[in-house]
Length: 330
Image 1 (spheres, helix red, strand yellow):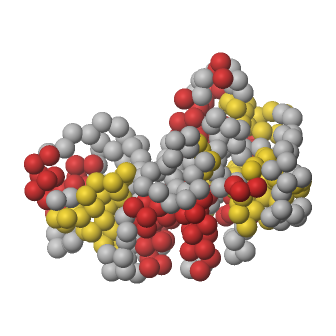
Image 2 (cartoon, helix red, strand yellow):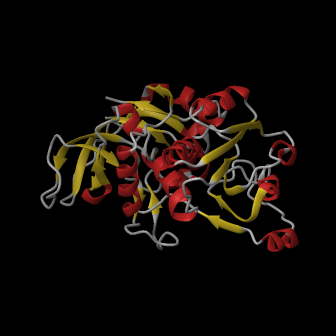
């Protein structure tokens, strides 16, 4: 089968499109012929973190496809079932934090940038009927991350005002759509006027430039919840605009991991700061139910062929996307 494999060199130069052996199915596994797979910024990080001495690795966390083979102990699935991959390995039930041993598909285990993958029978779920194959394939990681960030950690309510600095990523476009589905107000920022216009097209109530004076632009706003994924470049600006007693949930740091804050301002304001990452299998199923009930679809930016991996990774690296990008496979 064909796959995107990382080997021989660290970074993007280690990516290859090549033939590899199809994986064998264990007794508790299913083999899925992938129809599509989604890209995430995690895939860029994996190219930097994966070491040559660890051997070849198939990248990718998101995917959807058709079951073509089932193991002897599999009783929930049959050949021909249409499924989406749950890439969170070893996290079954909702909890405050992932359990020890939690991993994400695509490192250390081989991932979804391939024609076939084998998965434990408990790590696939029925494909939502309202989604195309491309939409289903880009769904898992970003849609799950957004669900946990907004509902489990952020505890958003109808009528809340939610701010999303740096709109454009797969996760934040899902957060925007989730917010509108439950009746929350949304404020977005971006350095791109095009992305601001697209966000308004999805229902954003207020859209401002990331480099503007947020305090001036947001006079009169009472921000209940702010979803922070940028890091140093925006964190303190975020802290200055949320209401007293408001909450910041952070799930990423696309600029810098290290942030200095005015701790006195923080405790006087009685702010809440929460971390979040991915989510459990229980939340994954709840997310699928939510998007079906509300007819939510991923915001698809662009799909590539597996053989166009260099173009796809460059597009992702340069943050050109608004919403999800991925690979159409079969």
